[in-house]
Amino acid sequence: GEDVEQSLFLSVREGDSSVINCTYTDSSSTYLYWYKQEPGAGLQLLTYIFSNMDMKQDQRLTVLLNKKDKHLSLRIADTQTGDSAIYFCAELDSSASKIIFGSGTRLSIRP
Amino acid sequence: SQTIHQWPATLVQPVGSPLSLECTVEGTSNPNLYWYRQAAGRGLQLLFYSVGIGQISSEVPQNLSASRPQDRQFILSSKKLLLSDSGFYLCAWSGTNYGYTFGSGTRLTVV
Image 1 (cartoon, chains in turn orange, purple):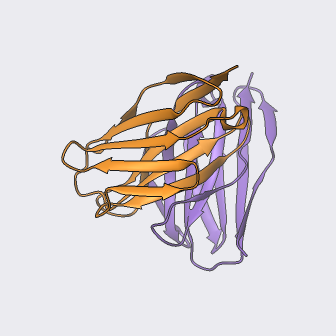
Image 2 (image 1 turned 90 degrees about the vertical axis):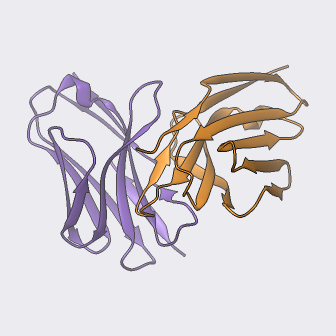
C-alpha cells in the first residue's frame, strides 16, 4: 500500500534555510502536498505540486520533486520563529479518493 | 466562501461512555468528507471518508463509526470509549484534488 515517510525532527537557526524531506511509495500519485500544523490547531495546506512538475516556488517556500527517487522536499528560506510547527508531507493515493499523510516533521527554530 | 466547523474543541470523557463529534461544511455541495485521528506525537491516521450521503468507507476497524446524515454533515461516534481512543480528531473536506481543508480539531481525552 501507499506509504509516506519523513524524519520526525528538524532544528535550524533563525534566518537559515530549512529543508524538510519526504519519500513516498506510490509512483502513480498525481498530487503531492505540504501541510503545516501549529500547536493545538488543524492542518493548513501550504502548497501542492502536480506530478509533472519538478519544482514549485511560492515566496519563501520551494518544493522540489524527484519522481525517479520518489522524493519530495520543502525548503523554507530565511526561517522565522513563526515557522515553528509540524510539517506534513502527503500524497494523493492512486485511487484519487484520499490523501495519505506522513508522520510529520517537527521544525524548531533556535536563536 | 467555504468554511468547515468542528465541535467541541476539547472533550474529556470517561471510559465506556459514548461519543459524538460533529463536523459541518458550508459554502459547497457534495464535498468529500474525512475523519482523521492524530495520536500524541504521531502522524495522521485516516479513520473514515465519505463521498456522499450515507456512503461511508472505513479505513481502520475499531470501535468508532461514522455517519453522514446530510450532504454537509459528518458525525464520528462511539458507543463505548476506550482509553486508546484519546487523541486529536480532525475533520476535513475536499472538492478537488488541490488538498483538503481541515477543521480546527477536537482534542479528546478518555479518562
